[in-house]
Length: 613
Image (tube, rainbow, N blue to C red; front, side):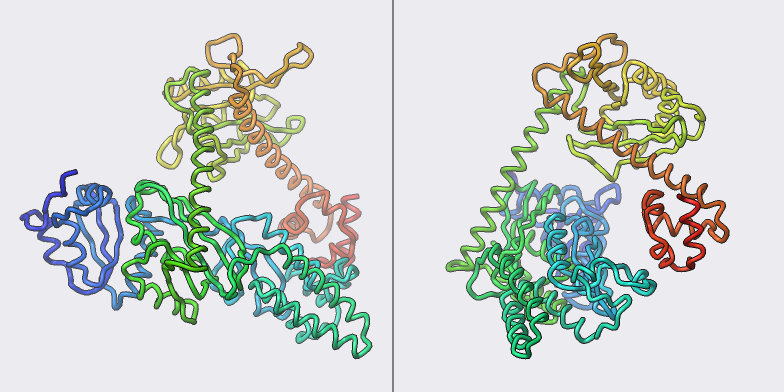
């Protein structure tokens, strides 16, 4: 490959701009000819760092050379220190998502465990966002199921409250959790805050992975209680200790020094990287997470620096040691920044031998294995999409499929829903609900026409067109879709198909796929995966529509049923629906449970029960 041209000595406006860049520390933003930011970086000396990109270098990577060729303008931001530049770089990368930077997805889609230690009686919560609000957070965790199982174990083992803050101050008697010995009942009973705080500290130790220390503490308390002949308390502590010992047996020990550390493994090509993070706490492997970096990734050292800066800016649990496959140039700066965030010394290491090197090999092996599995899965998914393209006579691969389904109950509360699948997987941020506005009687065709007009009448960057429009129904629904797209001037822009359920009375054994201007259903061939994918998309649309319709119906039923209750207005109706979740649960609630809500006294609660019975 030819080395990139030396553009630093030219008289171009870009070269002149480089000469005027400050020599102080800061952040630089490279832009293309459209003004779009394509790369964000930091530097101790902005002018030297930026100029180095445009000098002839034999070892310059293909990715860097391609990026430099696209640069049309450079903007800089001077900072007071290197540390400020590091933080600003991470923030700008997350905000602008440049093409040539490492961009991590926001961790809000991963669950974390929250304990609000500012509360008089803290509780365990599963949350998706982790603001710095003074609470203690553990996570984020890659498996929602594992988090729920952990919280379930905590709730069974440690008698903390389960009720909401609103319920805590309004209950008149303890709930069933207190009767089962799983809650001290601070909502109604006189619970010693010191005792409760002691249990909270035990939960924190457990979540920090310090289970052996916790078991020793509980055993000591158990023996003290037994010596004082408080056998009931000793039995409770014994059961708690046994439950923790069983949990400890299932944990995997990977180090003998029992330190908190994260271990990185990196694999992939120059255009795609997969980063694996092994989380080790107190010597026990707590979990493994994987990050796909789709955008063109930099060299491994630069990738490590950008990844650590963004990852630990999002995460609350910073370990005392991070093991990496390659040290970045600014290791000392990263260590200083992480240490400041953690309020304790943090080290970044690249071990070459021994136990720590074995952990790096383990992380690398996990990364390579996961990448291989994901590539194999992607290959299978692409094969299915290729099969659909051929069977449905499409001009391009059905990478984006949108499916519509209508729902109503005896003609009431008609709604529709759209689901989106991208590369064979649900794309839930693209899902949409529609309340039917122009159809008052049961008319599936008219409802479908209205929704298609609303969806495809405003195609644009925020509403991209699909590769395949799938409607729930047969030839009639397909004809409606064709007519609507013709009126919108979208004829031939993307494929249309309908999926109709099999008619068992006619001896049909499979659902049927219909195309426009074709009387007979499509022969889907011997590969059952093609029809299965379309069925999954149709069933997801049906689920989404029915759930929305049921919610609409429940809200209207509650409002109409409670109209006769004196004192129950719009706000109290909304509160009842939000708290209980639907008409069935409100009807099943006791007078005491209804009366526990703010603004509802006993007589009003009795009137609500009478109105719904």
